[in-house]
Length: 112
Image (cartoon, rainbow, N blue to C red; front, side, top):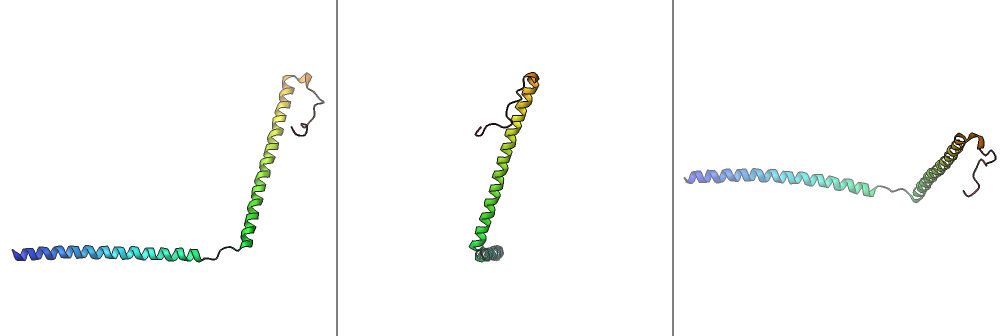
């Protein structure tokens, strides 16, 4: 009976030792992965940053893009206004062709 108990204890010790060895290898692998990530992040943090004149140039380029977008929006607003005027004129002609005011200005007065 004592032999069976000793064999059971040895078997449990082998299983525990195997599991412990596997767990330690797993933790060492995770630590190596984390060390690599830390090294990569350190390298990224130490990279040379853009000089101030380059940053200023990029800011100017962004300002130009914003200006282009805004001018395009203004042009679109102008086109929309003129299309509305065209639609109104055509409605007038269609509704009463005999009474269309030929002296009405082509463009609205300034400020309208």
